[in-house]
Length: 235
Ligand SMILES: Cc1cc2nc3c(=O)[nH]c(=O)nc-3n(C[C@H](O)[C@H](O)[C@H](O)COP(=O)(O)OP(=O)(O)OC[C@H]3O[C@@H](n4cnc5c(N)ncnc54)[C@H](O)[C@@H]3O)c2cc1C
Image 1 (cartoon, rainbow, N blue to C red):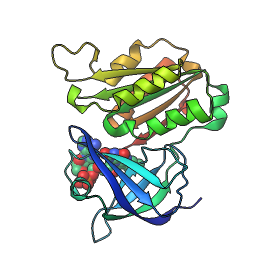
Image 2 (image 1 turned 30 degrees about the vertical axis):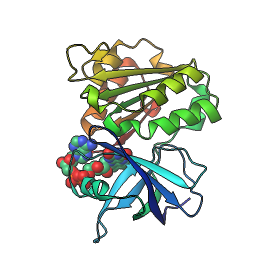
Image 3 (image 1 turned 45 degrees about the horizontal axis):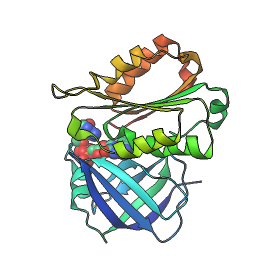
């Protein structure tokens, strides 16, 4: 389906943690997209746009976006200025960072690797995979953040773990406090330590260009075929 201009209203907003804000946009009509896609949001009067992954599931009239406002450019300032009831204009739905339905038939494991708000498209992708597609292999999400205070959606991830034995969730923190009990360092380090049949693993990467370039290199060295690596570069 070709992207179209949609006008919606801010229904809800929440500061999830640190600089990370969730904005829920309600539309008059039902919106149809594939988990993993993004919208292009108009962020000023001159028509400047910023892309944001959809952090919610399709099937209703809403779209959630999850935005890290720390870059503090035009997009971040616009997100911070939004109030409940404000009208917003999006172009949707864009991108091919979606579950490869043919490849999941052959895959033994599906590994999602995210840094920061790169987790946004992954939650609906994972929920769809486990719930609607009933994928029975291992689904693993590894999430890298800088500090403990950047963490959110932990209860939601616990709920998925409770409902699906084949879902594994790990967090890795690059600058944790002394008493952080979990993994420390960068995402790539944790990925190196994972033992799985990489040749039968489908990988989805989302976050900074630097993380994606470095992780993709490691994955190829581990034997993941290029066509099994999918990514969305945020900046
Ligand atoms: C397909 C796609 C989907 C995206 N989805 C999301 C999303 O779901 N959530 C989200 O928060 N962002 C997302 N982004 C990034 C987003 O579009 C903006 O680039 C980001 O919010 C910064 O916009 P800005 O106008 O505030 O800053 P800009 O003025 O555009 O950038 C300021 C500076 O910050 C750097 N920068 C941009 N983003 C980050 C970041 N996250 N951390 C550190 N430095 C950064 C830029 O390289 C630039 O140097 C996505 C980008 C793409 C291409």
